[in-house]
Image 1 (cartoon, rainbow, N blue to C red):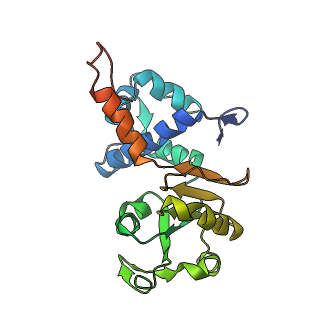
Image 2 (image 1 turned 90 degrees about the vertical axis):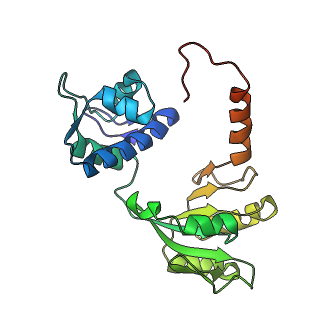
Length: 222
């Protein structure tokens, strides 16, 4: 991801991008508490990162704290929002109104993080037309029309693996270039389409591996 700093735009490493999103959540909490400044040590402790990582990650944005004073919270949060692309409008559709899709549709944290949930779709005719949260389930047979009408530019696939690739192809054909995939399958997409995969089973396996090992001295979770 390009970052605008004092010089040329730089590419921010993926691991740093993930941490920047966590820093932004912390900064929003700090702003809500009325705090105007935060040190790299305080930001590190609240985010679970090291203060070295915090300083390095924020330097990608051209943001350097003042020794003994720290960072101004509001300007820093705005820099992070710009770097993460949150200053543009993100209109999100969830495809799949099963248990996971319904839970996501009822989640109130989307809007506070800069994402507007505008559509929920499913192919089950017994589900189509039901109200979930503030949305009415649309028929996925009309997926392309629904996405275009709602000006969707980000889609969440809460689908079984057997249906995910076909639906993904249709989402892409409707002009969506950002996809969050909960299906346990690797999706084939054009180069210009960005896909993030959320595989909870894999994460649990990784957690199980670490849980069976004795703690190492000085080790901390990522």
